[in-house]
Length: 248
Image 1 (cartoon, rainbow, N blue to C red):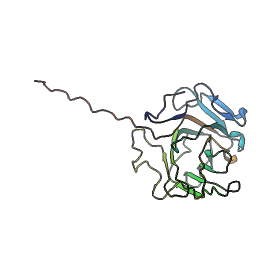
Image 2 (image 1 turned 180 degrees about the horizontal axis):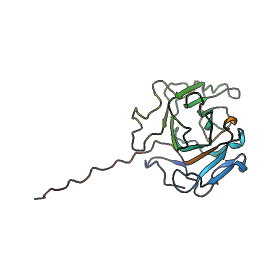
Image 3 (image 1 turned 60 degrees about the vertical axis):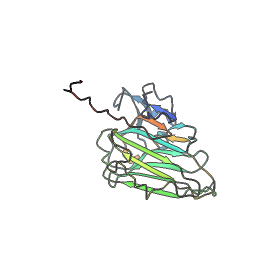
Image 4 (image 1 turned 90 degrees about the vertical axis):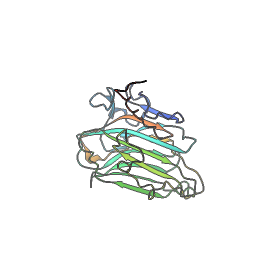
């Protein structure tokens, strides 16, 4: 476990895992292709290594209680090693017992990051979440370097267009979450909308999901996974004390 990025005293910390103590926080679909690895680490000595075999066995699941304030912040670092230029899924939120999901993809067309949330509504037609897709271009993720993904979901009132989905890729830790240079979503265009009459909230995190089989052979590394119900409060460096002054 690592010191959590969220320093907001009002935030509820749901998960903070740097994999220094193993993979015990996660339920693994196929333990044979997951490792606590010292090959690469964003911080500390270890990360979570997953072999790409193009199947659901790559899923590592963490179950949590959906925050009562109806907000979710997710942060994680990932590195692709030996991956060919193809597509795949980095992760997913799921609302337990439904088909409501939020998925994180990379694409092979333009090295883009793509997210979308949806509900097929076959099981719960009264909970029609609909579909919302967002595309992010010009993110080179095939360079064997660590990359940072962050998202903040503010749930809408069911049937009301007042939810917001925000995503950042490789935001410097000192940069404001409102800085347009790093904010990858225009929140005037992207809404987290439930058009139905019920409420659905995510309670399952999966990192990764099934990767693209065409990436073989290759490995995906995760580190510093953080989950909370508020955006982090950023460190503000205090101004330097003046020098050369005489106090009289």
